[in-house]
Image (cartoon, rainbow, N blue to C red; front, side):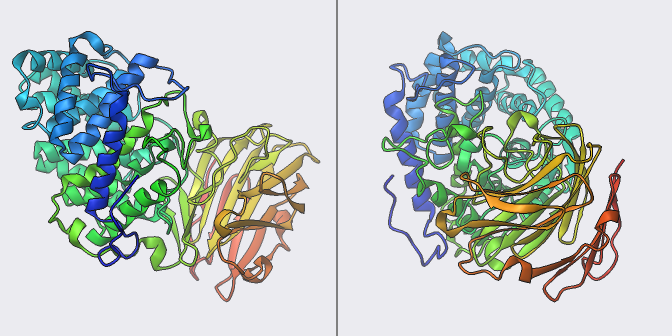
Length: 587
């Protein structure tokens, strides 16, 4: 992909400006054109993998997701082509929108694009096409969505149909129903779960916030915008911390092949005025993510987005991933709705959170601990609250980062896990709290044992503590650390402290230490890009004289001593900030 020369005066961190975003959008739109059918109703992108919805639905996905990109770009020439495809699609080419079917997802992209470009597209269609389009979209108002972010697709369709006075009563009901349903999943501090359970990931930004905030903004509804915009602003305070210094988003959660869709909530905050981020910080984060992927093979020699993370990678895909699925990355171009003179485009880039200072930040809603280091730009996410076993390995590992991928091959050692009796599974995760430099949880191991885990972090150093209960004496326990092949100078370390020995690194790059069920299992861990870091054992001291009683004492450098008490039912961390903190407990 050819882009303009970098502008390091306006964008000292990334070199990217609005001109680069426009050029990237134009290149992506041009690259998909050869794969449109003659009537332009479907885009059959190449590849030997189809989604479980089938070729016809995949072709509709190609149309809808690239139409959304054309709508953000406000490309009138492209929109004329998509108008031809729309007329053909609603004449009987497109599959019907039915309960829990993929066309419901694509209907939302089409409806949003039509709403954003009404003067350029909808208003220029003849009455017959408009009526057939409204009829096709109308099925989305009564189709039953999957109970997750899909609840917002009828909301988005209803929002558009109501503006053109089509099925207004049904549209209102669909909007009210969808917005009411997502309230069940709002857990506070700007965080939603993606449906029932504890599924926390990027869908918070590119779905759970995106659709209701856009709906309120486009409806010019001050009450709803205050509600949903306020939640978005709170979320962005946390979300901005989940990008590495190289621009990489956190590699956690499903649908990672959407890549720079992760930038959508950043732009959305600027678009609606609901953001804690400065204009220069917003553009730095968003442009960093775009540059990260474009420099690492996300676009192939044909100019097409591939199914993967950097280049093609089947490990990050789900059954619903088809050839056009990556084009939900179109959401990342939401910023092009902002005019060129908007300060988010004219302000000088400012440092991202990871570039300003080392930080260890507790996120109470998902029960995560975010650990970032300025010197190497790495961000690590300690997961003590997110679980969705359908999408392993990207949900239930103990830790993720912006620089490493979890091991997906089941024949390889599991990274960042506690393996009890040879079984690495982690289910039934119960958050036990987060605080100043620590996070804790409890889960069920594959053998039925209960594992209580605590991590303490400072700088790049981690102290990992595990208590295994309910297993037979002598049951082997293996604690694993980060999986990395030392790419770009990043390396992983794991050193046993108590209850463990035999530190090793296998061919997969997974560090691990082993022991038998007994008292506490304690290890030091580090993922770092520092070329010559201080040895782990010199960075932190751990006294385990009371380990048999579940008590240990930790001191990072010259900081205060922290006392950690772990039992099968509770965790207590005191002294992390020089004063006692409340216990984190569960039953």
